[in-house]
Amino acid sequence: MDTYNINKTGTGWALTKQGSARPSKTAETKEAIVELAKEFLSDKTASLRIHSMDGRIQEERTYPRKADPTRSPG
Image (cartoon, rainbow, N blue to C red; front, side, top):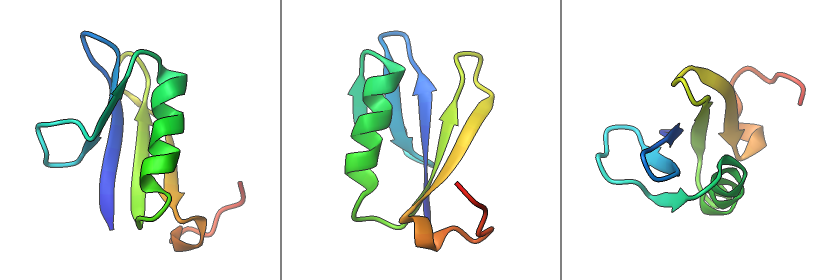
């Protein structure tokens, strides 16, 4: 399973595959990059870490939902 991160950049927000220097997607707002990430990851098996502006992990998601190893609700 690949891991992707959403992080704040100097010009907005970026969706980047872990280990890659180049973003897969970029957007001006966090809300926009989260929506782009949903579409981008819809056909992939991946983990998504959404970071806050200070870099801390704010939320983790698994795509598709059935691939979530913790089987947590929500």
